[in-house]
Image (cartoon, rainbow, N blue to C red; front, side, top):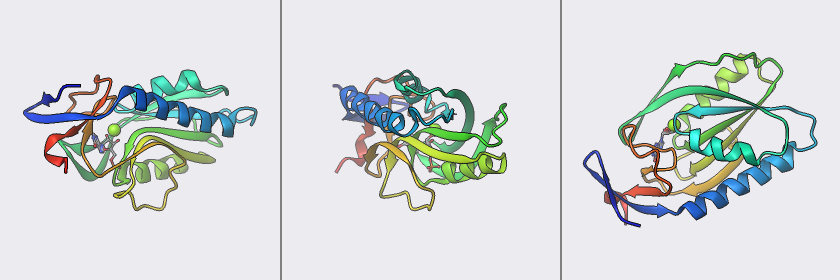
Length: 183
Ligand code: IMP
Ligand code: MG
């Protein structure tokens, strides 16, 4: 794999597509284990835009009945979290009494997840679970349990496989890391 340049910053290969797919398989197996035969029909809530790719790979691996809904949130500017979570596209389904599985690309500070879990509970969701493709486990210090985690990653800025740098790089099949941040 070659290093790449996005909007004037250099990124180097970090996680191969093979490892990414293995992480999706692992999360799908955990969800199937919890929901197959449970009689519960969860709402899989794709957090746009970053989760599109993860959610798109996850859904066909699920062996239980579920619905798909999307929400668009935004907290990042460039390579830093602003801490302020904006809802850009809202929800259009009734969540009263439902089990909702939030499908995220990455949990970093947890600001997004904390705000979203609060909103879903306010809308009457009975059970809210968090499923994330990646977790910056050294950064995340909030109390909300992250139920399903594909990969734990270091506190570095990454792009690819849905994750962007200023909206660019989401189409990359592998994940890259900011070159300035490699030790
Ligand atoms: P949090 O609210 O700080 O947990 O950040 C979560 C959101 O920030 C994610 O849904 C991503 O959109 C974005 N984000 C966090 N870390 C990264 C990263 O390393 N690369 C790209 N986007 C990121
Ligand atoms: Mg995102």
